[in-house]
Structures are given as C-alpha cells and as structure tokens.
Length: 471
Image 1 (cartoon, rainbow, N blue to C red):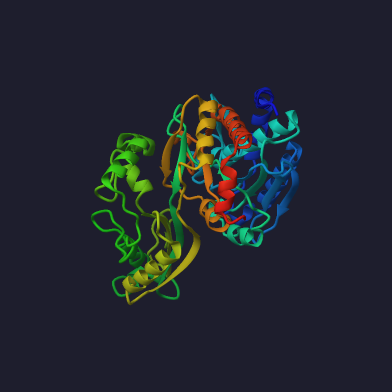
Image 2: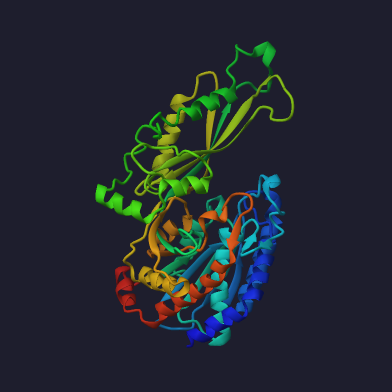
C-alpha cells in the first residue's frame, strides 16, 4: 500500500478535516454534569457516523451505566499487528465562563489555533487518528495493521465503566499495543513520548455538624463550625516541608538514584519554564525535588473545590450545617489507589474533631503506569515523530492520569504508546483551551507513519505475543 498517497490525501483534505473537528468540538460533552447527558449521546452518534464514513467496520455505540462508548474495528489483515486506538470525547466543565474570549462550545480559529473546550483534550488529538485511518482506507482500501478503536465518554470522570467493560470483553479487545494521543509535547518543535503516568484517587470529604444552619450570633463560639473543621482538616494534610502528612503515604513511592534523577531532569522543562506556563512567580511543594520531578516522580494532593455556607453577595450570619471538599491525589509509581484510600480514610477519621462528623465518598481511582521506552512500538513511534515533525522525540514523564493506560496494562497485558500533540500553552482544563492546528496536520502524518512502520516490519510481534502466553 502507498503511504505517499495517504499522506497526499490527508494534505488535500485538511480544510475539510478542520471543519469536521470544529463540528466535533461544538458538542458540550461535559461528562460530570447530568444536564449534558443528551449532548454526550448526540456526540457519540455523530462520532459513530464519522467512523463509518471513514471506512471502519463493526461501528457500535456501547451503552454503559453512565455515558456511551464508541467502538469500531478494521481486522482484515491476518497476521499483522493489532493496534488498540483509544481516545475520549468527553470534556471538562468550561467554568469560569466569563474568562473565555469566545463561547467554549462555539469553536473559533485565531491564527494557527482552534479555540474551544475539548479542542485539544481530547477531541483534536483523538480525531488525528480518525483522519489518518480514513486517508489509508480512501486511497488503498486497507490499513497497514489491524485496528480496534475505543472512544469513551467518561475519561474526565475517571473512566468508571471502562474496567468492567474491558473485563467482559477481554478476548474481543486483544491487541498487541495501544495508542493514545492525550499528552503533550515539550514545545512546538520538540515532540515527546511519555513513558509514565501518575495514578489518581479522587474523593469528596464531607463534614457535618448541626441538623440545619445556625444563627452565628446565637451559636458562634459555642458550636464547632463544620466549614471551619473541614478547613482545619484539609490544611493539616500537608506538612511544612510540602509532604503529604498521612502516615504510611510514602511507603511504596519508588525512589530513583541520583544519576537517574539527573537524566530525568534533563528531559523535562526547567523550573523557569514551569513557572512561566503556570503564570506564577514562585513554585511550591516537596523540598529536594525540582518542579518537573514533583509533578512526575512524586505524589501530590490538590484541593480542587470546596463548598459550604453562604457565598453570595453581602453577609449571612450562619454556622453552616455541612461542608464538602473535593480532594485529588496524584499517585507515584508503585502506589496503589485502594491502599492509599485505606490510609486516607483512617487518617481522616482520626483527625475529625469530636464535635462534627466526617464522611468520605470515592469518585474515581486509577493506577499509575510505566511504559518501557525500549519497546519496539515506542521505537516505531519515535521514528514516526521524526518523519512527521522533523525531530526525534524526547522521552518524558507525565504528571497526569489516563486510567486506560494502566487498565490496558493490567487487563490486556499490552503497553501503550503515548503520542501526544498538545502544547504547554494549550490551556488544557482552563478557559480558552486551544489546539495548535499545525500539530493537527503533522499529527495525521505522524499517525500514518506509525501505523505504516508497525505493519511494514514487525519481527517483534511473535516475541511480544509469546510473552503474553499466546493471548
């Protein structure tokens, strides 16, 4: 099959691909907000039609207890490697809306960037592979490898239904390697392949006291305020050295030798770059590590939201009956979410003041994952980046979490190639999120090269399959 013809097709149809991407971004697929459930279903139907149009087989919308998953496949090349392509079409909430320069779900192009919620995370990056597959199927009526696609609508809420789905369909989802584009490059001219992801544990901590709000004049100073107690508890979770103050929390955190740490630091951005991206003047966190190490090698705890009492204009003199904090732990290599959950529950129960009650609700769990950069598929990805971007990628580590990576590793026994096309300035999860359209074009070429390289010469395939016990 002709790689050149597919690359030319992608170049000739770039304008149409961008129009379709804008249409894709218009769907307000906020998975955490129930009012958008119908929008998510409409988007899943649109995506299924688009995959069918691209030429993929067995396109299905798979229902789950929450939001649907879209599946498609092309399995017409016996003996060739099978690539499991994953992406997610759900997005983060767009709040605060008043900070957007244009409505978040009315995507606009300014210069070389497409602005809109989900333009980069993950609709734009995921759509790269749809365009690449279509280019092959329209020009050669075939793909260089077998492909299975999983595009889910729940990643931004922790992929709660993905694990049981993979467990039920483990045989049907067998593959040799997974491919995900949901990470970022170091800069416009510095592509990167991530070889690790932190895990995550998200929870809500609720503290309650009186049965209803109380008059602060009548009861202030006599009744423990649940909102105050919650703030005291959360504030105590970090110590003065920037470490998480939960007994046993660091017991399984992987330690790296000084030479390995030095090599890792060389691959990542320095502290000045981190501060510029965050638009802050000073860093914060665990002593003895630079900012890149803190966000990739070490665990972290973020207070991502707090609610309680009155937050409207003016004053309301009350002691609120309850308060809630949203806590997000990022877990380092070798930390297990359920073990950390047990430690956190035990600690929070111990530090809850006697005059109030506390309750913990788990929102999501995901294990950390490490990928061997020496795997042949990673080498193919590195060469594909060189062909698509003109530069060899840097192997980096990600501070983020994609639950699918560890699930594919654990349940399917396959590594994931994390081929990211976002940029540090893409403002993922923030107002004015954007996707750099030159990366969209180069990303399609990179995806085409990757699939071609995997299918052209795969002597690693027999060894890889033997290591999986013939799965």
